[in-house]
Amino acid sequence: MTGPSPTARTGRRRQEITVARIAEMAGVSQPTVSKVINGHPGVSTATRRRVEELIREHGWQRRPERTEPAAIVEVLFQALDSLWALEIIRGVDEVARAHGMAVALTDMRGRHSPHREWIDQVLTRRPAGVIAVSAELTDRECAQLASRAIPLIALDPQGEPDHDVPSVGATNWNGGLSATRHLLELGHRRIAMINGPADLMCCRARLDGYRAAMDAAGVPVDPALLRGGALYVEDGRAQALALLALPDRPTAIFAANDLQALGAYQAALRAGLRVPEDLSVVGFDDLPLALWADPPMTTVRQPLAKMGAAAAGLVMTLAAGDPPEHDRVELATSLVVRASTAPPAR
Image (cartoon, rainbow, N blue to C red):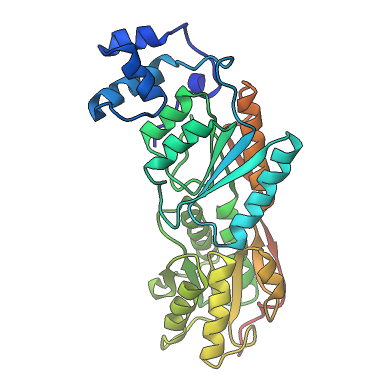
């Protein structure tokens, strides 16, 4: 994904550029350029792309005195139906409130990208900034946000974050490493991993951490023990049932999040196995349900609220016209050992 240039992102213009000059370079009228800037229809796709490219190239910004940003932080979620999302919202809201701002939420209902009308609605609202959580915006959408001086922050981006778009994440590789190393130190060798979608960078990093721990211990990774699915209880249960049905079943399962791990609990119960006596389980996130589980779940704590707060802090910095200290912020994960892991049964 190609994002707006650092010049556009911070609201500085490389040189004084006007709508009239953009129109002249694009070979169109000023009203046409205005339609593109404001996200209005009535402009051909080719013309819109040409104008947006010129706006991005020359770093044009709407004069702030003409249109003040709304006191809103826009948060775009791939899915809102989880405690994971609520923790991020809590962090964003804490910073937004401190700056006298409200939080607006958009649920993409599992989609990777927002619906077509979203960008027009955001341009109309003109928030102080946009936080895209595990969401992918098009070049055009990034350019349109930049043209209105609306900062964009990526939180847990799907792919490698573009350097022009500041991003916030966690040390997912280290989390996967510490979870797997814990199981290895308990004596497990048949360690399965139920991962999330392969296109999510955080899930790829957790799998790489798992592989690194196994490799460092000299334990071969059995491909039959690697499974993947959506980050929900149902997929965790289905994949764990398949793993537990293997002739040489795993003695431990590391899941890519707590919901999948809870699904592994359910699969163990259905298979007549006990956690942790017959099967150790490790999750990822440390949501409240990890503590409520029976037995309480060993998991990798991801500082979700702090990640939301860090993303909101970047919005405030950029909205003030200041460059961020770092384009990429990674917060530390930590292993929380509870009662769902034990040495393998002999």
